[in-house]
Length: 190
Image (cartoon, rainbow, N blue to C red; front, side, top):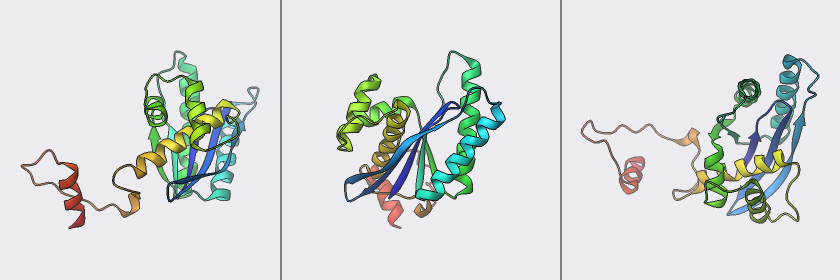
């Protein structure tokens, strides 16, 4: 499976592309999309959209994992990042790519198992997991690879690889509001 991870922003968008097959990771590419702060926001968003669209067309990932917005002290920052995230999601939708969002806490937990991990710890784990000679630079690209790994690990944990295209709709009996994993698996086999 091929996954692209995205660390959204307006000045810098980090991206990472990883292939995962038979418990092995292969880094295909990583980097950043840059926009000039002197450009109007519409122009910056157009650059982000066009570059993201090019990346998606070039690598043809099966799914996209993108960092979810979290609290910013500066409202102007959160609005611009939300706009960039929106055009990135649009590019993903227009390329028929399955998408998932992860909070920074989920990424920290997914990579280090510790929700208060420092950025450097996450970067070191990304380097170790992907068997890279050095920590990916810039930081936004390393973050994108971490998001990518979190998504792959989420998809492959416990029940194996699950594609949302292959999921069945399952209805619970009206008197049931909780299922064990084993009961859920049995329902899926029906």
